[in-house]
Image 1 (cartoon, rainbow, N blue to C red):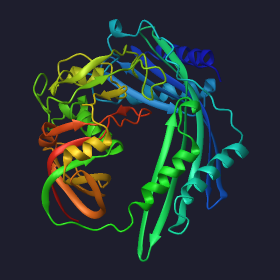
Image 2 (cartoon, rainbow, N blue to C red):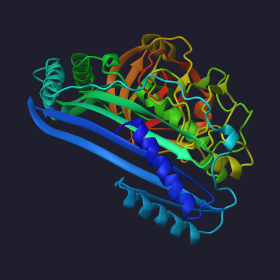
Image 3 (tube, rainbow, N blue to C red):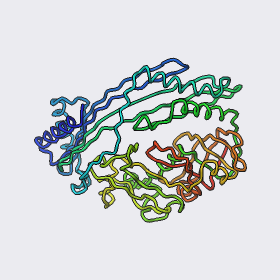
Image 4 (cartoon, one colour):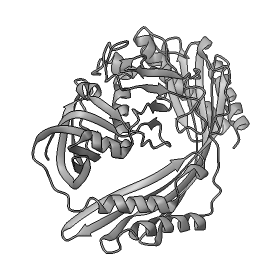
Length: 440
């Protein structure tokens, strides 16, 4: 199903909504296909195909709103969905803040962001790649790597169209592919697991299957012999994949929903110093091949590059039109989320970060959801490595790390250059000056 077909369906839906008496409406139609294979212990385990299509419509009768969706794109199903949305709207309380985003904010141009790179790989070839990936993991330590949670290869492509009553209509195709591996190592009674993965819009931008497997194996074996540690207050280094989680927590705290509900530890922080002067974050929606690139948000509002944090000072919130109206502000083009957050490195590579830390904790895994969004209190189960004099000494597990996100942000003393590029939040490892570490 091509983009022009989907755009025509959006126009049919908007026409039906208008005929039903809606004062305005918006709709999104999508179609996608994918293939996933997994291999375990050298044998194909799962082969999955998906073929998804769907339509959602939101109608407005003044300040009343109704929404319905369907996985059937026939004309009768479209009519039924519009009718259902209209019926819901008529029984919904008025909300002064609902409605389409302002017409003057609609994207005027939708440049090609190079997001569509289909990977036409056969099931047989995908299985072979997964087998090579898993074999590379086992080859790291054939004696101690005894089991596997599997290696997988997935490829998907999709296309969507969005339109609203302002006359805006836009859409584009995109693709996403990945290779992953997770294995288990044993040494006596001790057992550990770890994993690695690679993903990209374009399969040629991914790491090789052998590299993914090798790294998964190395990460698993190095965790054997883990100990616990006594309670202490020390520097903590969050490995890059986990550091992106810290950035996600920050974004959650400056997002519209948390702000207007007053459930954020960063209320009324615009223009204020909320983090270390070393923390600089840009939002770059128009990166070619970017995981979260888009020329417009899920309301048709044009996206723009901007600085979210500059030298630790908050430059902007993350708002949709609804949350912006609730706050008496203007949408930032973030309905549906943020677009490619780039955290500026302070220049150190991973080895240099360890040296800068001296003695402390390198965190490579966190467990549970231990952030209180209202107070900022942070406490999570963790595993990783104890570092002595800038060198990894031994693995640790069954520990808890605790602090407050407000303090953690202000105590950032370095951001590494070890960035994982194929991420929607691109950051290197983040070094926090001090956290409480305790036996779990």
